[in-house]
Length: 188
Image 1 (cartoon, rainbow, N blue to C red):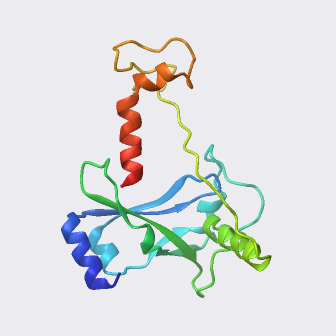
Image 2 (cartoon, rainbow, N blue to C red; image 1 turned 45 degrees about the vertical axis):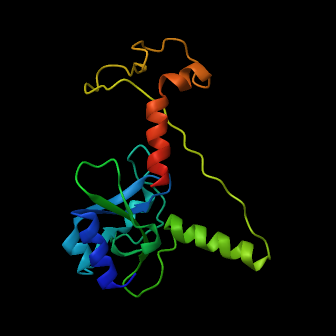
Image 3 (cartoon, rainbow, N blue to C red; image 1 turned 135 degrees about the horizontal axis):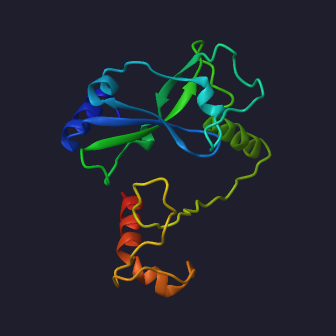
């Protein structure tokens, strides 16, 4: 997609902001929410290299795997991943990015670069990996007070699930509208 086509697509979709994301070591989406004009004007979007050594608990690895200066890395969007986020109230796009140092070399600890390296090793061996994603999640009742314990949600029957049967067909039926939304969003 060239710049003109991209600008037209943003206009057609009424995109106001773009989630510029990179996955971290745990697969958590990290990044920035940038205005569409900053994204379209090819401004260099940067993140600190330490984004790749943060754990799921918010701590950082103790190993010196990054430059002690915690230099910025440059994000370059993989335009094949550009999508509209259907669950956002304001028209928002999302794009996954590859990461590079100032000299143009790829960030070797970026999970996308690690994956590219692994795929190259498969290719060098004449092999092709077969993979499938798995989406795992828990449904919980909305809770805005972090002091309270999480509770099971209320299903479409109006009842709260009290029996822990997450793989039962009855439990799936209770939350079918939500499951249908997940499928629809995944399709988009």
